[in-house]
Image (cartoon, rainbow, N blue to C red; front, side):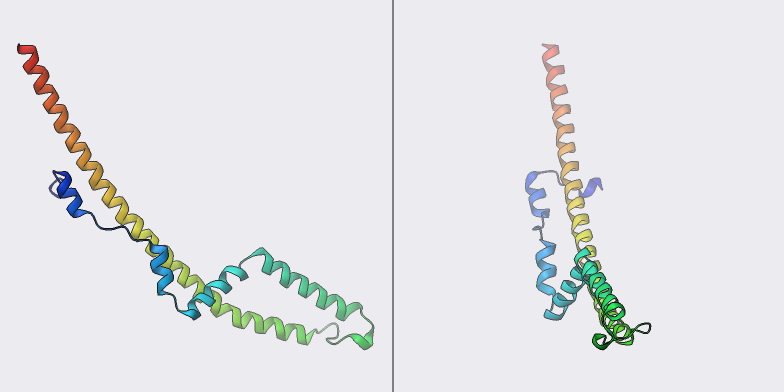
Length: 150
């Protein structure tokens, strides 16, 4: 690693790569369908969606259990229509959630790679600073020894 450490500020500047904003790069790569999948993943995985589904289920089951028999459209105990709609929601949401989670994982991986690049850059810069400080210490010791001789 010592051989890779720049000796001067100019060498350090030559090694410098421009920083990339991974969030912008990832966002630009997304297709319209990917954006929809991410939006669905973000919203389905929220408490708001849970409350919506829970409220819908309780309302549906309560109405079809306690409403007057003439107004019930999905009779107790089978709730066939409710089961059908619930299963259709699950069937359509499952692949969309998986797609969204894969896109989120790709984004997380890209951020991790960018963080690693920044950490490597910081390590080289810190090592360069330490080398320069060590050189300064040696020069100061030489100057002190020279002054002590006089």
